[in-house]
Image: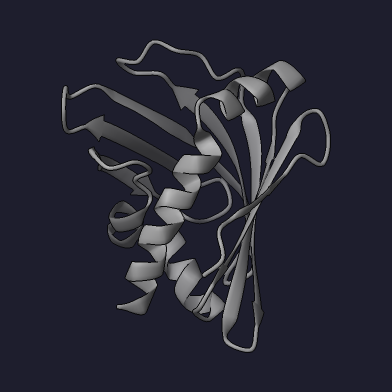
Length: 161
């Protein structure tokens, strides 16, 4: 599949779109079922996701935590689902927990993920709305979008299985 397309629609937004060779119902499952999410949302090699708790419903909460295999350092994200339309759209807040890394990534974000299917293939688009340009630029400087593409390559494998 083609690599993720990253755009900056405004000073406070990042949009990442990626085509997957699978129907929306399967991409949705991979995004909303913790056991599947833990298999692909890992970014660069050497990281695991020991915590993946998700109550995918309006007002439900989630917590994701990653751990470095090399030194055990951890970081994570948590938030609350604001809109859930199965196989179509998820909107949630997202807060960064720097854990052992101690870095900052700004205040909360609003994340909108859409799943658009055409002829058995799905474009998953993640739109991230940051509180400020500084927050957006700080997140981008972490290599976030490169990590997303690495994860999407793993997702390709999960979907093929």
